[in-house]
Structure formats: C-alpha cells, structure tokens
Amino acid sequence: FYAAALSEIEACPWIELELGVRALDWRAEGEAVEVQTSAGDLRGGLVLDGRPRPPSGPDEVHLWQHFRGWRVRVDRAAFDPSSATLMDFRISQEHGLGFVYVLPFAPDEALVEATFMTPATFPERRYEQTLRDYLGDLGVASYEILERESGRIPMSTAGWPRSLDARVRRIGTAAGAARSSTGCALPVETSSKD
Image (cartoon, rainbow, N blue to C red; front, side, top):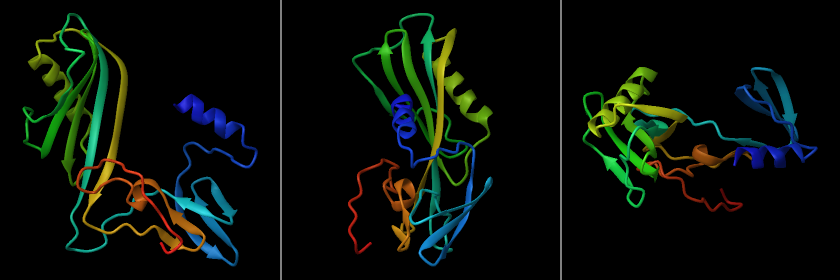
C-alpha cells in the first residue's frame, strides 16, 4: 500500500511530500493560507488538516484507542488460520480497558495485537509485556517478530467540525471519519454546507 501511494505521490509534480515535518498552526491571509511547520512556513490556497484536536470542554470525554501489534512466526502450530480471535479481554485490566486480537495467516504465523482505551497512551514496555504474556498464555515460548505496528485513534464525545475556514478543511480522524465510540473508520459524506 505504502509503495503504491508513494509512487502516485511521486508522479504528481504539484505534490511535495515532507516526512518528519510537523504542522504547528495556520492562519488565513487574503486568498491564501499560511501554515507554520517545524521546517518553516508554507503557503497555499487550500489546506487539508488531519491533526486530531484535543478536548475543549470540561464535560467532554476524551480517550485514546491505542495499540501495538506484532506479526509473529512461532515455533509450532499455535493458530487456526480459519478463525480470528477478536476482543479477547482475558488480559490484565489493571491500567484500563484492553483486549487482544489475533489474525492468523498460517498455523505458525499471525498478527497479535494489544489494544487499550484509556485517557493516555502507555510506555512501549507495557504493550510489549502484554503481547509476551498473551503469547505465553497460548503456550508459545519461542517466536520471531516479523513486523511491528502501532497507532492511536482519538475517541471523544466532542463534535468534529469539518470546516475551519473556507480554505481549511479537516480530513480523516480530525473530521470525524473514525467513529468516536469504536475507533472504526467509515467514509464520511461531505457537502458544501459543512
């Protein structure tokens, strides 16, 4: 997916990809928008803003759905490729609501992911320990980590404005594309009235 997306971006002469640069703020200036970034200022006629916004009111609930996953190859047949394990809550709930899911690719290979819903994310060691403990509970003593993934999705009772200005549009999670109650992303229809 990333290779295909990067190939499409590279083929567009009007797109310049800047990795590792943070968008800090923006301000409208006449017909343009100036965006302050960690690498300097940029100007354009339209800004698509995907930055999640923090809670703004004392009565808002704001949680993060945060996760860490390993695609592992184990030392024996430990997984049933015809059956996924979803939302296994048999992990410690000491630090907040959490579950693990397992998506098997083969009897000895699967994605094992620890997911939590709490007000703050955890230190890396907590996710890693959860995954080690879960694999141990499955009777897996030896495994190779083939890939790692992690992320966080905001879950809030706050509304998600789609337009900040005629030239600044929210996109993705910042526009409410992820359902606040589950973190699942759904297509969002927009209209000129947003």
